[in-house]
Length: 131
Image 1 (cartoon, one colour):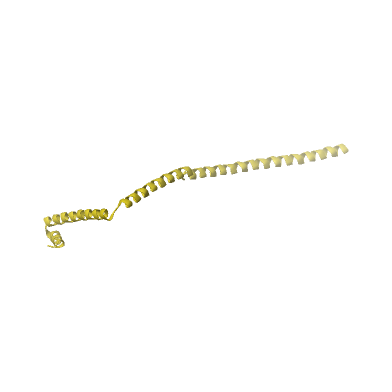
Image 2: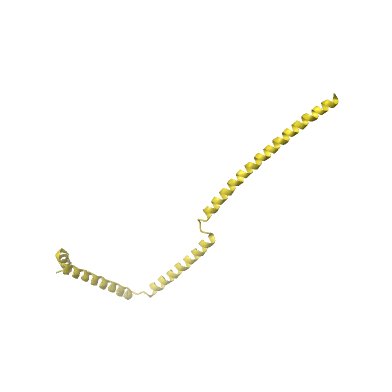
């Protein structure tokens, strides 16, 4: 009887250990699947971030373009400063007079064309010319 009890207890212990082992294996399998799922999500998120980053300008490129733009801006400011330093009232008056003569010439040409065409346009052109 003692041997039977020992065999029975051993069988019960073996059954308990097998059940625990099977439960542990099942838990490890479920945990492995969960890790795979999470890793898949992380890889997908990483790819989305890489794709988003491709739409932005890198810091190095931005800094180089910014320095080029600042150099161009300094060059323009130097030109403007040099121009303003060399500009005089007489020079500005000459530019104004030349512009005014050009406008007058265009006005007289357009009035001549209107007068040559006759009609109301010719009459308005004569009135504007003071005649």
